[in-house]
Amino acid sequence: MESRHIRHFLAAYDAGTFAAAAERLGLSQQAVSKSILRLESQLGVRLFERDGRRIRPTEYAELFLPHARTMAAEAERFRAGLDDMLGGRRGLVRVGVGPSAAAHMVAAAADHLVRERPGLRMQVLAGIYEDMIEDLVCGKLDLFVAVRLVERRSPLIREEKLCDIDYVVVAGPDHPLADLEDITLERLVQERWISGANLGVIEEAIENSFAAEGLALPRSEIETTSLLFTLAMLDRGRHLSILPEMLVSHEIASGRLVKLRLRAAPWRRPLIVATRARGVKSPLVEMLIAQFRNHLATAQG
View 1 (cartoon, rainbow, N blue to C red):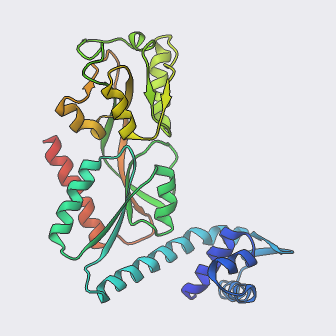
View 2 (view 1 turned 30 degrees about the vertical axis):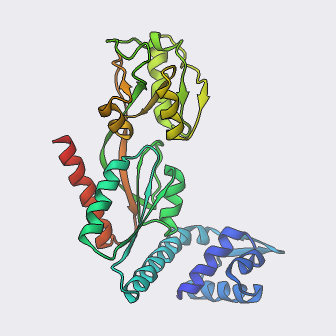
View 3 (view 1 turned 60 degrees about the horizontal axis):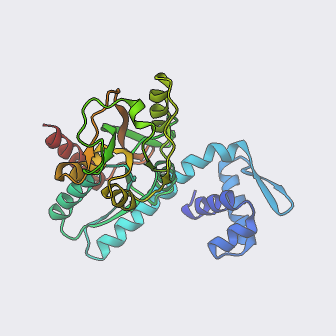
């Protein structure tokens, strides 16, 4: 089968009609329809049921879909690598970084890689776990690093746990609780809170800790997806927040933030690096992941 047939299949699957797929691809509807028919002939199965202008994927299309996405992603990665080589560069690696991931770890690994490979290009894109899964499968990313905030896992990606990330309660150094020891969860209930969004199962773990002591989860006064805004609010000394410790380790070390000393079990989630399950890891991806491990080993040693 030809790569263009696969691209046309994916466009039709995602668009829901041959007309919409043709518009996305810059082709005629007839060309897309013929391409799908040719692919169906090669596979020996019907991929779409035609219902007027609409199309419905068959069970064979659903079976073929993850393989098609992987083949399209690998072809795109090859084309990008070939373009770089022809342009005198030494490769391209595209990295997704979750908002709670270890930005300093990724930066250290990236710095090492670009020094080792002059001419290398890197794209580092911010995203959240579930969105980056789709981008990885579709070939927009070669790998991503994120805290896994959901329990379900996609069979289309391969995950490697790098370490555990502790979520901690932090405050500005002028907050009344900053210098206290052995702070109970009950003491936190009446405080003013600023919280993040898309916390997933870590929010359930925090809520369970409060519920185990007969307490309701503190209500947030402000919710935000901006770390910079959160830090600016904490600087003012009136709010608390729960953040991944690794994410704000520099702020804690410098004294800008204080990690409250709680009488509670830690809230913990795995930091993972994900690659395509059916793809072959490129040497650049392998080198970057090796640097992640080295950085963590040095930091923990």
